[in-house]
Length: 283
View 1 (cartoon, rainbow, N blue to C red):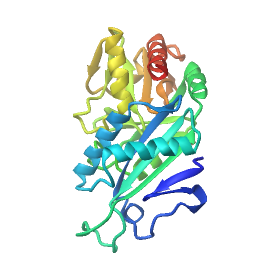
View 2 (cartoon, one colour):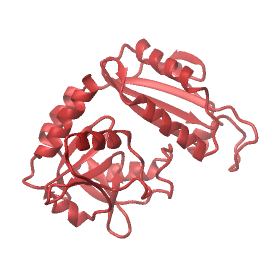
View 3 (tube, rainbow, N blue to C red):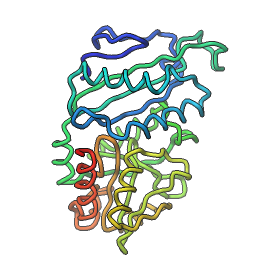
């Protein structure tokens, strides 16, 4: 857990960190967020994360709490004060405090909160060496999944259903039977002919930062990458399946709805991408 939190201009102990009850993030989930990996004390792919944060704020007509340069300094200071070498940095912006009304307030000051906690990437790699199980769940999220909104109740319900089914992650499926993404991840398969396939970000999914990095790494390794829709049946028939996220890299999915993917063990493509990704973060 983060010991020191940044809240609206102050660095305070977690026990003293509060936002107002009328904050629109609390009242309406009227907020956006980012989660950034920290490796060796440095942020991984921070600028793409900030690009996406600014895009999310712009799409919601939300003012930034500060400029990018001072925000970088705040993030660096939160990492320093918590003495985190390897960890996960969370930043959240809401529209701020206002009298409860569905319409945007005419005037509001954004709220900005930053936390940082330790994360063992050795544990992530140990999990990746075994792979995880996943469970399909209906995608009932709102129609702007490209915005990294704090409105995550459908994601939470899907993740909980997956955990109750004995799975680690939920694989979301649209009404036409196509995989969209995970409850908190992007989903990939390796097809029978060896191509890496993941749904295009033009198709109402979140443009994952680790998704983009893994795609760049794969192309640098001369792997064929194809962006497009695939069904649950395509996934179950794939050579490999994995998901990408800031905290899990390229995590192999070795079982989907109780059915083995490939031979039921992490495949060579995912393992190669994991090694390459950690080489990138350790540079």
